[in-house]
Image 1 (cartoon, rainbow, N blue to C red):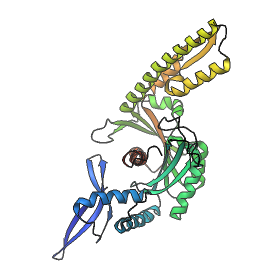
Image 2 (cartoon, one colour; image 1 turned 120 degrees about the vertical axis):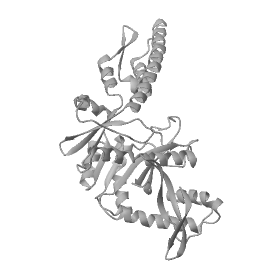
Image 3 (spheres, one colour; image 1 turned 90 degrees about the vertical axis):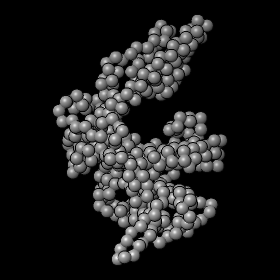
Image 4 (cartoon, one colour; image 1 turned 90 degrees about the horizontal axis):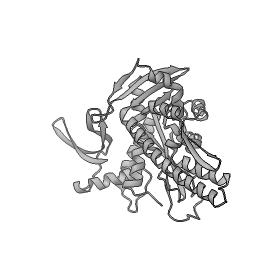
Length: 378
């Protein structure tokens, strides 16, 4: 966000005001989007405008300042009023996602500090989880702090409760969420609360759509932005839902690289484990099944993108592994493929895709929290 001067002339008079804007990326390139007209508020010297905008952005994200500034409070009040009005509009978007960060130390006096799945791979640290709701413009509607061992998908009810408490309205919006929230129970709950949903489907469910992905009819290309590779999309209906099949070449290359990298590391670690099993056997103290199973399980967890394609077993004291060639071949066919699902049948294919991509605003907010605002590690 930043502040810029706006000059207009009307009736022979010149009017000067200041507006809070942000840069947004559109298919036509970067553009300035007005967040709020600051009216007659004096933002001070021009060299202080960027700092003031940063303070406003921090306040919108729930960060209080050690140095209160009435200009910040005034701007936040204007934006909140605008948000409240927008949230009351039927059919508005609510973006929801979660992240977590880690503590350094034991955090013994913090009841929310728990060990869980770290999204930053800090399995050695206790965590705290955060859920964030944004509107379609990227403004925070609300946030919640959860224990570090909270599973993302268990927070949907609390999110809907918080949304209704903040907006004073139940239902009517479209909730946009990532695949971690897309369980059948959660989608049923969203419907029962009279909301629509737009979510990404679970990756393992792509196999049931393989025939549709392979069918060459009905695909169209969309351009994410000027410098991005086009994405192929195709819309189909299943029951009362709309499925949007998507294939991204850039995503395919990324998934293939991750799988190949993990596969090399997995095989190397399996070879090391096989040597350990053989050595224990030579010493007359064979590795117990429980210990071996736990070590194999840890490898499968560490290399989840590759471990599912290998069958590992001990035969006559020797550790062996075989590639599930058919299963991996199917995975290669689906590299870069994913799908979205919604009950909004009034939306076209490109609208569905671009609406879901708005969810990256939350990912950007998380990056700002952990990077720009240096929230990473507590």
